[in-house]
Image (cartoon, rainbow, N blue to C red; front, side, top):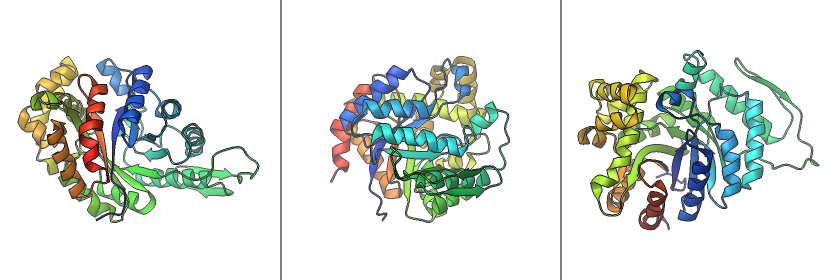
Length: 345
């Protein structure tokens, strides 16, 4: 069993209005969530009446609005900013949040590469460059590095400089086995994609091959007494991500879907509905059977506790609830009252 502490947080997509995201973060803080991870939304969401916002900017604002909640980038693409700039952005969040409240996550993001018409084949080298440079710059010593994609030459940080010090935990988001192995080699944690199942957690553990934090993105929703109502939000967010697997990352998530027992023919109608009628139309195409295969943390508090226990037993050390549906603030409070205490020492 891993020595990494077990944590439960929320994965927040950054395509919602800023005030709503900040309000949600305050509720998470009060409810006792361990973390909020900001999944940087990219311009693909414009197709669905939403607008992408920068995780690095939102994270600093969230840090100022909360007291104990850890703030994570889950993730930003190394292609969006030079790693030296990433280190500069990280310093801002460290300063806004205070010690021990910031987690830095990188992920390739095929959606973003599609938006910028970038290449999607060479990803391991750029990821290694990005992590190496960010750690080197934030470490504070003089740092020089020549990589195939990114390079840096940065002087040492002066002892007199008024700034936070140290390197935050650095996570690598990974679906493919080679990237997961790289996460185990150079990262403090590995983040898995939406529609992660317990079977995919076990697969990830084998590939990572080290005792690092395994953060698992799981579609989620909850209701105090009504199981069907408690699965409604998870059905909607599952529809969005199943459509994404067809529209944006076809091929990259084959193993994820195979381990869930999901056939492409099952999700193609979901993607078509998403394209033609938006997320509510896609939701209507997610059958109970298909939702069950996604292994959501959803339903009543008892359902959610049982699901989280299964994820923990499979090797997940950090549940990231991809929470969706009506009255999310009350859902967060309900998780805080009825679910989190079951997993506290």
